[in-house]
Length: 101
Length: 478
Ligand SMILES: [Zn+2]
Image (cartoon, rainbow over all chains, first blue to last red; front, side, top):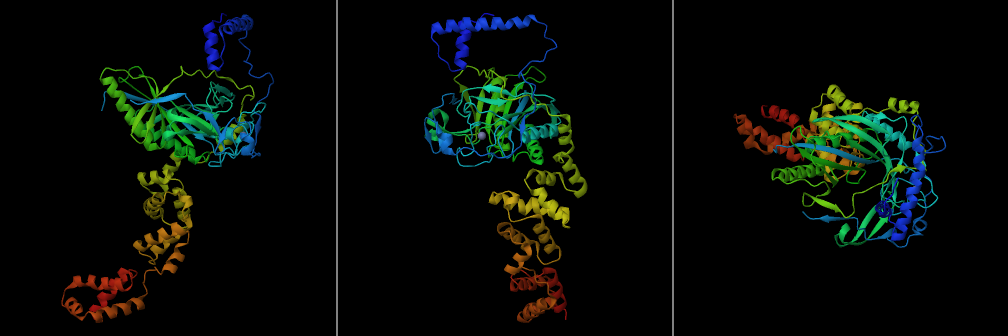
């Protein structure tokens, strides 16, 4: 299956990764090779095989609804590049804008 | 009325009131100081692993069963990938093509609404935008509190069966009643523990679906209806004038009563869902599903039918009793202590509710309980209190939590019915007003009101009016 440079740019954008043109070309080839390899599976008759999300057959690993100690806010914020009012401080969020109409 | 047919679907997010979060043992308490209920799991620190809260799975099944859904014999969690600082992992654990409950319905006023699915996911953190007006687009930066990140959420998605804003409100109201009866959430829209988003489109009667618009940010049932009414009219106007509706998300603004476009600067989201590798499949055993099914509480629809039958209440009274938190419990407790259901209901839906609204508190936060309401009704029934005085006592009971008997005693409010005491008062009034007594005896019978009025004044409103009527009648005919 052929992966185009535009496919790579699209996926990179979704994952917030920044590549130069040489990298885009390399990943297009690498990703194409990986998909090519995986597509060999399609040659098999797998009609009766369940999709495997997990290699180990385990279900319903649950815990009781009981409180466990949390971190202190100091610990929680220890790795934060910036904090304010005991909250994580993040740069301006530019996802959406309200347009008056 | 426009010539179009309105098509609405509603997505409701409900925060479960479990002790702990969906995938970690941090407290799920509302209103704790910022970032005090966080741990490596809900902060998304490397190497941490989520473990499913069993109670949340039980609650999800309970909700599905109450909504006549099928409970999946096997389902999965997926990662929904997106970059937004309210989720520190950069993905939200949700369910995608294999939800835990699906294919149900809810009967509400205006017609049955299909339930597509009810699935489990986790809530996001809470951001505050710092800068002018606290609005996102002119903020200088934002602050995030992750206490809410990882709180168990159930998303309930309806079929596009809703035919108008009033029907939408009826659906959301009944859904809230059902969730409340299950005791799985405190379903407070103003606090965000129940949130409604709506999709609305118009079409020619019986025609193809029109372009839909998603509206968000309605924080009461009333604003859900108002936002949909606004949007319905806006779309009709566009279509009538030959324009087309743009597919978009719009925010309801309570202040100006309009919806506003929230245009995304990004290309359409691609959430790249994939199975959550850190969680195993969920396969609730049949025995557990049956255990939950057999221990379901009574649902509002059946409870309403029972109230109409057993207590002979009107539809309006039943609606009020079952829609306001704690009111039905109050009446039930009073009835259990022998109070007549209609009398108790009249108090509850009348003066009690009015006082709760004035004070802005829930029934369980007021000083009144079913026992005290029963006592109050008894004091009226045995003539100790007039209805007017009882209303006064009720206010004090609700404010102080004292028993009605105690209030009557402390404030000396008991109606004076004592014969000899009233007789002495009547005697004095007749003697003090010989002219009026003469005229009454000469046939001016309407003067009886004058005498009773004087006696009420002398007893500061506490004389029993019936007893006084009798007394004056006999005294003046001597
Ligand atoms: Zn946690």
